[in-house]
Structures are given as structure tokens and as C-alpha cells.
Image: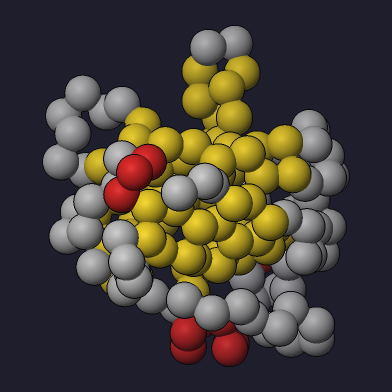
Length: 145
């Protein structure tokens, strides 16, 4: 299966006062959220920590409140299997953004042929490498079923 990364649904929104203290966080959903207007309550209701797949593949949607603006037009959605003690990424998907984005909304599709395994829990991070170090903008965890 080829990876798909669709980006730029919402990019440079200002966080609402209710979410302002929760920057660096990410919500994953199994379906797309309408991000026009006040969408945070709906996203929170539809947030999942377990994502069900079909035919050895999964599709997720996410909303990330970035810890700080990226200063670049591309971040990576990186998956680390919590069972892997070496802390090597399973896979990473490029996500296009704007350098001044504060909120990023996107989705990705992936499958077992890319190293993912049902029943495993993953640390999911929006990050980029800067000087050989990972700069993490938002994170969450997700179990695949």
C-alpha cells in the first residue's frame, strides 16, 4: 500500500482560549472533522485512542495544536512502536503546512506493508529533525486494531 498524506485543511488558526494551554497536543479521529467554526468540542467527542482498520490498513484524521510554529513548510507525522526498545520509527509521513501554522489538520492512510501491526500501540508525533535532534510539535498515542 502506498502512503497517502493529505494536508492543509486548516493551517494557521489561532488556538481558542480554552485550548491555548493545551498546545503540543493532538487528537486522532476515525473520520474527518468539519473545522469551520468551533470544532474543538466535536473533535474531542470523536477522538479515539484505538483505531480500527480494514484489510490490514488504517486511515486516521488528526488535529494538532502545535507547541510552536514550525518555521518550515513540511513536518513529519512519525510513528514509534512502544514495544520497540530501540526507539526506531516504524514510519514517517511528510505533512505540508505553513511556516506560521499554530493548528494543523490532516489525514494519512497506511498499512501492514509499511511496518504497522494490529494490536500494537504507537507514539504518534508531529516533528522535524533540526541539527540531528527531533523537534516535536505535538504528540499522542494510538493503538491499532
